[in-house]
Amino acid sequence: MQFKEIIGHKDIKEHLVRTVQENRVSHAQLFLGPEGSGSLALAYAYAQFLNCENRQLTDSCGECPSCRKYSKLIHPDLHMSYPFIAKHKEDTATDYADSWRKSFLSNPYMGLEYWRNQLDADNKQVNINIAEAHGIIKKLSLKSFEAEYKVLIMWLPEYLDTQGNALLKLIEEPPEKTLFILVAENQDKILNTIISRTQLVKIKKLDHMEVAQHLKSVYHLSDQESAEIAFIADGNLQEAMNQILRKQIIILA
Ligand SMILES: [Zn+2]
Image (cartoon, rainbow, N blue to C red):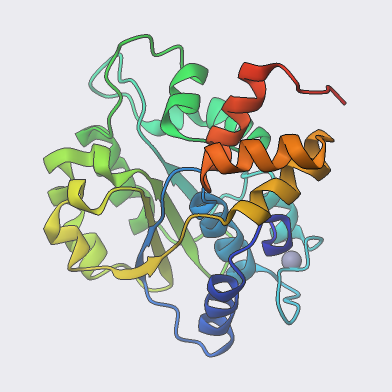
């Protein structure tokens, strides 16, 4: 994913680009933004930019071998973690990697409910289990395959529960050239011990105009329909999509 594919967040994009250009990428960062704001997309775009072999001034090139793999979420040095339903205690997020890629690539603004639907979760509990925490420690202790940086992007560390304590040492003293990005929605539900070890990147909700503009161009809605939905969604693009589906005014391409 490239920065230019993500709606809004001009300041955050500039900040992230600068950290790479000035060689001061903090090894553990907490991207904190409400559902549907694009914080997960920003994390992926940042990682892609960091590993791009032909970085442009404000974005990754989108064409080098690294960008091509990143854009499909298949780069061997990109590790992805997220809540899932563990059917067995040894299950890890990797068991759901195909669904994850499909979900994110079709809806980079997805919220937890959307992801749960992809998992056929019914009422089952999703979480990030201890096997996943141990798997992360193991994966990040290996040498990178081809990129300069190994990257781990963990979505919704709120679901780590106390398993997160297993990761503290890794977050505090990660192996060299490792970037750890946690993408969270609710600061109160994250272990304090994790918060104190990460650099906070605060991501605001999108503004109504940005959402309305996006709905107009992607879903071909009228000015009035876009504005109404953007108002109800209040900066949450996932909610805007839910509204569109509910109203069944989606025009299939
Ligand atoms: Zn590139």
